[in-house]
Image (cartoon, one colour):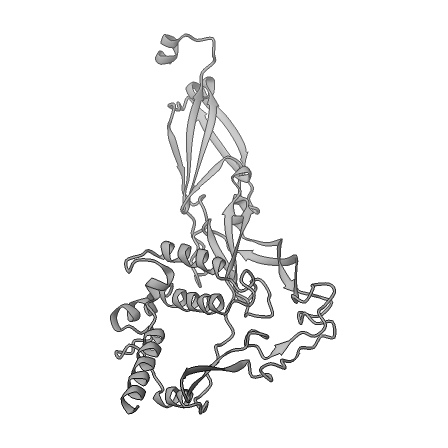
Length: 367
């Protein structure tokens, strides 16, 4: 009997240790040399597959969802991933980060139930990314841009509680602890007690008795949000503006961030092209202007305070087709943090000579 008991204890210990040690790469189904993009893609697919909303009442799917989130939290962070690869622990613990409470296991095995209760923290929602298209003049001058985006927001009727009386009541199954105790018969006279998350309240300890009529107990509804952000002069295109904690609302998680990707609307470029801190423009001129000079032209420029650019040539000054004129200091503002001195790139004007269509090929080549 004593040998059988020790064998059973050793088997339980082996199972618990095996369960406690997660191979995060295996959890996400990626190789150890996987790129950040591959890790993000795997996480997105698996989190959608095992999301609690798609698997109501499925305890295994819920645990898998939590496990996927833990794996992604480590592997998506460069420092934690490095520590995990080197030590087996994201915090750099050389012992692999395994902390096992033998007293807790023996207490559960003999029905004591006196082990310390481990409660998972509230998980964080995913970040949301939206695109904001602005014209080149806004990148040049800087601007406070207003926009709206549709998001999941707290239900205005129940104030995000999901309850008609705006209250959540104590779960009668777990008595508010979020944990229930399940007994397993291991053999004659041997009973194991396992503490697990309550399947009635999802481990929250609270339930909704009277669901809100407006949001049907979800606590959230889709609707518009209004924001305004400041685009700095010279800010790069495709740069991100992060609004922390402004992701989708949900009573079951802490909102992630709202990431605004600022893109350039090329339909509002006014004929200018931006390459880093410089501007480029193709300017057509007539054959007469190219050969004789003596002309002046005013074109619209991006600067809100000096919106006119003057191009000119003295009489007799010839311009060759494809010739490039460089105007110093008329490019994009250089974005330098905490620098009071304004710096600008250059503007490159390439002239394109327009030859009348009534000339034959030989005449055009000669001209």
